[in-house]
Length: 534
Image (cartoon, rainbow, N blue to C red):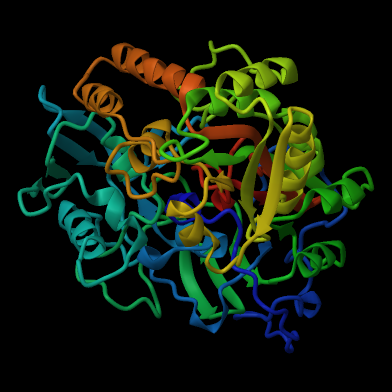
C-alpha cells in the first residue's frame, strides 16, 4: 500500500529511547551528549534568524542535526536508504542523476541534461563534470554499475521497482560522460526514474560502505551506527562547496529528545516535530519553526470493487460527507491544508482547475437513497496508530458520516501489519502518502497491474490513457491527458483525499538557508550544503 511505496515512509520507525552515552568531540558523538563539544563550532548562537534573513552566507562551523534513527543496523549504503535519517546521510555523501523540485518535476543533478528519442524508448543522458571524493571523475560506467547493483534480483534495494522500465542489458556507456538508456517501452516521464528515491550513484565496484567515497557535498569522516555521522566540506563538489566546515547527523529517536536538544544548544537542527510542539515554541524566540508544506497526503481509500463502494454514487456521497477543514484542524492540529480528492496538490500536472469539493450532507443523503441505502448504511473504517492523525481522522469522519445516516464502525488494526492488512482486505481505510510525482502515483496505485492498488481501481480505458501519456512527447499535450485522468478520479475514484500535512522541523536562531518551500524528500529538503551559521 502507500506507506511502503512512497519515496520515504511518512515517519521513521519508532524505537525505544536509548540512554545517552558520553560524547566524543572531533569524532562520532552520542546523540544528546554534545554540549562539551562547544555549541555550533564557534558560531554566535544568539545572532541571526532561522527564517533566512541572515545576510550573506558565512563559511565555517559545524551544524549538528538530530533525526530519528534506525538503530545499530544503520548503514551508509545509499541503496539501502529507508528512513529520513538514511536519506539525509545519503544526500550528504552521494548524489543522484536527478532529484525532485518542490513541484515534483525532475531537476538535473549529476546528469547535466537528458534527451529522448522520437519514440521515447531511448534516452541519452549527459553527465556533468563531477568528481568523487578521491578526485577521480564520475563516469558513465559508475552510473551503469549503480543501476545494475540496485536492480540485482538477489538484493532488496528500494529503488529497484523504479528502475524497472530500463533494459539495463541493452543500455550502454557511449563514452565517459554519456549513458544511453534503452527502455522496455515508451516512457515520457523517464527523468522521474533518474530522481527516484534511493537511486544514488556509487563508484564502479563499490560494495562496502564503511568508509564511503561519494560525490556529494560532504566527505566522510566517521560513523557510529545508531549514534552519529560526521562529514566535512568537499571543496571539489560540482555544485559548489558547502558553507559549513562540518555536518554531524545525530540520532535522537524521541521527538522530545530532539526538541530538548535544540532548546539546550546540543543541536542546531531538529527534524520531525509534531504540531503541538511547533505551536508551543513557534513564537517563543528560542527556535525557528519551519513548515514544509504539502509533505504528506492524508485521506481514506475506498475499495471500488466491493460493496458498498462498488457503486460510484456511494463513493460520491462519501466525498460529500467529508468536512475537510474539520479533518485538517482535528487530525492534523491545523498543520496542513485541505485536499480535493486528488493526489499532488501544487505538483506538476496537478489539475487545479477542478473546483474544490465542499461538504454537502443533503446531496450525500440523496445519493445514498438512490443507491438503495435510504434506511441507513454501516461500514467499517480501518485505522491504526501507524501514522499521526489516523485514529483522530477516523473518529472525526465517524461523526461527520452520522449526519448523513451512515454508521461508521472504527476498527483499530495492528500498526506493524496495517499496510499489508488493508491493501486487499476491508472496504475503507485511512491512508497517507509522502511526495512523489503524479505520474508515479498513477503508475504505482491506479493502473490495473499497479503493485499497491489499494482502491482496486482497474479500468482498461484509464490504463490506456496512461500509456497514451507516456507516448506523448509534447508536455502540454501530456498535461491535458493527465487532466482527463484526474477529472475521472475526482468524479468516481476511490481516494478520498481530505488534506495535505505539513512536515515540521526547527532550527536554532543562528541557522540560515533552510528552505521553507521544500516538501520532505525533495531536492531542497535536508539541503545542508546550502545552510550556514551566522
